[in-house]
Length: 236
Length: 225
Image (tube, rainbow over all chains, first blue to last red; front, side, top):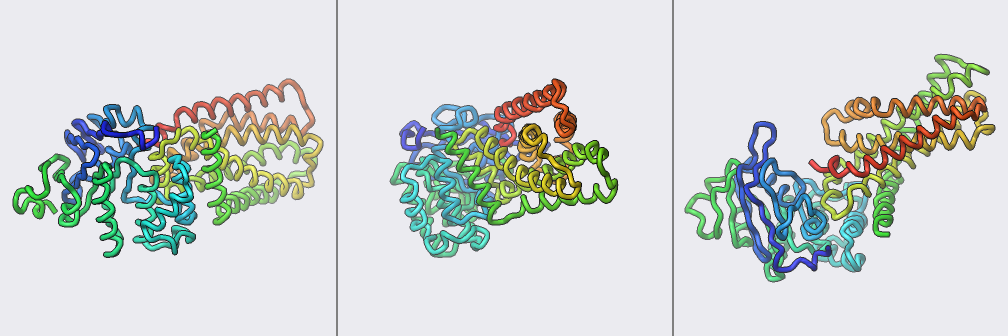
């Protein structure tokens, strides 16, 4: 199912999700319901479970208990529709270092069945200021440029949901500011955003909703401006 | 049609990466040639003895070269978690497996051609009288081996001791394949095109089909967490 077919019912929901690595509980009974147009900042200290939650929401990791639903269907059982509708940025870049930035985007475009792929790749290269670096192998690019290619890869198939784990990593000030404005625009386009960052002020300027995690549990879920005084700072 | 196009895209990706780096085929060829060379110095086979030892020698070289090839072929997928990147795409994981199988078949096939050529020259042995049968047996044996190898290489790709893990996981499964391959090759090189040889060839074909189908169906679970 193409991403465009996903409209108002495009709800992403984690229901009482727990994740165990051996005896260690990375997530404990976390529930999170997110609708189109929402921008959610997942915030918390190292080891709080942010990455685990985002990977589970993206369908990349299987919860030990609970389930993730996309449009009311299990993201694991009905994965095709969800995968088309989600763009994910992880700590890893998902880029083949032996291919150029353009070739990586071309490969991703084919896998996601992007129509008018070549013009779309040009748009992405322009959007992330990668035109001058598009024919270089990824291994020759700096970490910041690789992150831009990773973001371009996630935006390429025009997903209805973007799940971004530390998307500002490695970006310079200009690229970081550009990404901020791109993420704010998503809301106007009716797209959903769930992201994590350690820069609270930057994250809360984009997000309408803050989900604060601590030791695998949700400690706060609400507007960022209503966060209890000093709470956010205390968490990092 | 989209499935074929996706397999082609993924195969082209593997070939492009290999063409630029030339790591897998080169190292596999060198390794295979080394086995052939050491064997010659160790046993000095001649005449009838060559005929008796060659099938085993060839399949030892193919087996060890295969391990190297399968490990190398998932190196690019492991780096930057590219296998996870593929898993995120709305693509049947079975197609990713088939593309990987074909890539391994191609790379291993090139290495095997070099090994066979070197063996023919080194041991002054002509494969021509039974060439058609020999090619069929090597193709089926390699196909079955790559069918298992691509799956287990994906399983071991994210383990810490993957170079050790792959042969440990794989060899018990492919042991019958190697028995059938050596038996069939031995008979073909002797010109013994008997029903027993056809029986071994049928076993190779069955093994290749069964493991390709099973791996195709299970690859989703291999790729997933």
